[in-house]
Amino acid sequence: MKLSEKQLELVDAQVKRLVKTDSYYGKMYREAGITEIKSQEDFEKIPFSSKADLRNAYPLGIQAVPDEEVVRIHSSSGTTGKPVIIPYTAKDVDDWAIMFARCYETAGITKKDRIQITPGYGLWTAGIGFQAGCEKLGAMAVPMGPGNTDKQLQMMIDLESTVLTATSSYALLLAEEINKRGIRDQIKLKKGIFGSERWSQKMRDYIQKELGIELYDIYGLTEIYGPGIGINCDKQHGMHYWDDYIYIEIINPATGEQVEDGEEGEIVITTLVKEGAPLLRFRTHDISRIIPGECECGSKYPRLDIIKGRSDDMFKVHGVNMFPSQVEEILGMVDGVSSEYNINIAHDDEKNRDVILVTVEAEGRVDFEKTGQSIKELFKSKMSVTPKITVVPVGTLPRTEKKAKRIIDHRDK
Ligand code: ZN
Image (cartoon, rainbow, N blue to C red; front, side, top):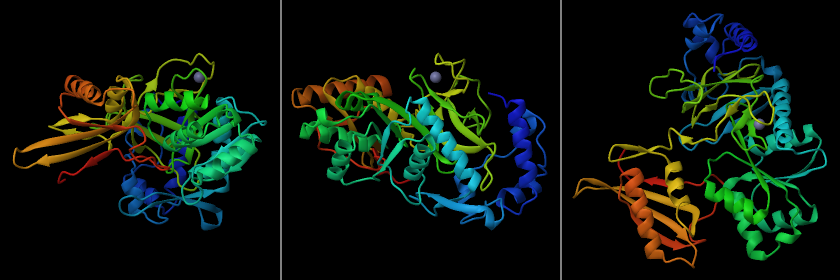
C-alpha cells in the first residue's frame, strides 16, 4: 500500500523536524542526506529502523524533543541484551489513548462496560495502555494487573466485569479455572480483548466456548506506542489499523522490497505524528499481510490479517523454514488435542541429524498412542519432518501469564 498524500506530508514533516535534532535518527538521516520526503520513491530510500538501533541508542538517544516535553518512558522487555527505552510526550500519551479508545469502540465496547485489565503495569506498555484507553472511552477500569487468580475471579464476579483484557495464555488459564470451579454462571463477561501473542484457532475456540465471549485481537508493540494501533471488528476478518497515526508497509524480509497488497511478508511501521520517539520504517519481524479492499463493517481503516508468526520465531529443521503457526494448524486437525504444546529440537551428533521432540496434551477420552501416530503422520505430510511425539494429559504443560515459550532449540547456534 502506497502512502496517501496526507501521509506523505506527515512523513515529510517528521523528517524535517528530525534532522534539526541531534537525536540518533536525526544524525543518521542528516549524514545520509535525507532531508525531505516528496514521493513514495524518496520514502523507500529511508533506511529501515530496528530494535538494534534502539539498543545502540540506549537509553534516550532516540529522544527527538527537549527533556521538558517528555512526560513518560516505557521499555520493552529485554530478554536478550539491553532493553529498549521509548520516551513519550503528553501528546504521544494522549494519541495512544485515543487510538486505544478507538479499538474498544471497534470491538463494540461502550461507556457502560467494565473492563478488567490483567496485563502488567509498569515499564512495559500493556496495562497502562488498556487503562488509558478505557478511561478515554469512559468505561470503568478494573486495574488488576496479572496474577492472583483467586482475587481476579472474585473481582470478576463481584464487580460484574463485562470485558476481559489479557494475554491469550492468561485468558486460557482463567477459562480453565472458571471451568474447574464451576462458576461460569456467575461470570458476566461478554467480550475478551487479547494481544501480544499469536495464538491458535484451537485456543481461541476453547476460550470462546468456555467463557462464552466474543474475542478480539489487539495489535501493537512498545516501540510504536504499545498495544492499541489496531484491532479486529465484528466481521472477524483482519484487524483495522489507524492509518492517520501509522503507515504500514509489508516487505519481503529477505530483499526489503515492498510486496503487493494481499501478499504475506514482514510488517514495517512508520509513525506519522509521534513526537518523543518517531520511528520511520521500523521492522517489527511480525509476519502478516494487508487484506485488500474494504471491510464489510463499512470502516474505511485498512486491515492487517492476523499475525502469522514472527520472522524470529521461525525455526529451521533439515534446512526447512517452519513457523509455530504451522504446528498449531496441525494440532487443530486432531481430535481431543489441546492448544498447548512444546517442541524441543536437538542435534544427534552420532547420526548427524536434527531430532524433534513434540509434546502435546490430549483429553482422557482419546487413545494417546493413536493420537500421537496421527500427529506424526500430519507432520510428515505437511512439514516433511518426522518428530517423536509424546502425548500427555491436558493440564500437564505449564500455563503462563506471560508469552508462552513453545520452541526450545538445544542445537549449537
Ligand atoms: Zn471491519
